[in-house]
Figure 1 (spheres, rainbow, N blue to C red):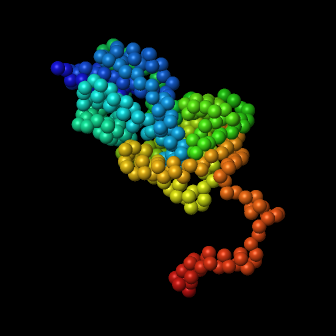
Figure 2: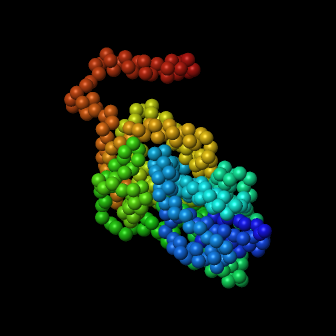
Figure 3: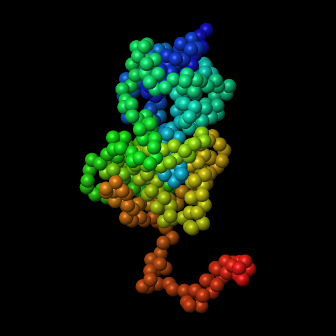
Length: 393
């Protein structure tokens, strides 16, 4: 009986070559699995490419809604920004894709699972850990960690065997889903050189008018745009389009990878950045200072765990539950203005905000007496004053 390998198949060069390489190297039957997490792809062509490369069976799994509801919207609740800038689009998709691949492996009755990650990237960590968690005794094969082929070698391998490969720019390697677009390539690896305009797609400026927009949240969940109730998928897609068309949503930073080195990373995430920015503002409107500082701390921990491939770490779930508990009160509306590649918050309201104009106004309402103010300042600063005197005289 032939060995059967289930491959997480994106339709790109690496995984297309992997189908034939796995077949030839292991004399195996390869079952390909493509998971739709919102990437703008022609899945019919991807299926055709898989069969032409040698797949014996192909699965297409529509996981857009699950990705939006279980992962992307949770990223909003947890203000998930790795190193304060990256909304974790690729990192969030990997455990879901791995889960779907495991479902197919169980159905096909095999423990052999493959993916297209290299030995230099973060995705190998995310895929391997997710697969190990969800399939007991799984046997993982990562061809790109084994075959030692360059990109040019892979193209030659495919051409020699008549395998059709996806036509894509040699300059950039793209990973895309509903929550963001990742752009990599040797031509933009130098962090001192500005990323050229042709690297971007979602955030090319197509509209120069000023966009006024309101986002409504219910218990931390974004539910409406300009008063219209939308599903998570539709809400994210609409924001990607209308905010991205005004140039907002670009990210460029020097990122600390899991695998031990810094790399220049470029992303586009108009909807993610818009929703996280407005959500953070509403949290600040509602939460007490102690709650807010605690939430910011656990947001950072949660983001690190997700980025590092530790989606199944128990602490991630514990932190997430705490974040959702705090978000029971995060209901309200945030108004923004988008123009010239920037987003500015212009107003917010919530029935649970403790803001009081009667207290905060300088022209009317409550004022502490001089005695009350002096007493508060004396007690508030006593630790600092006494420590300064004890240390320096």
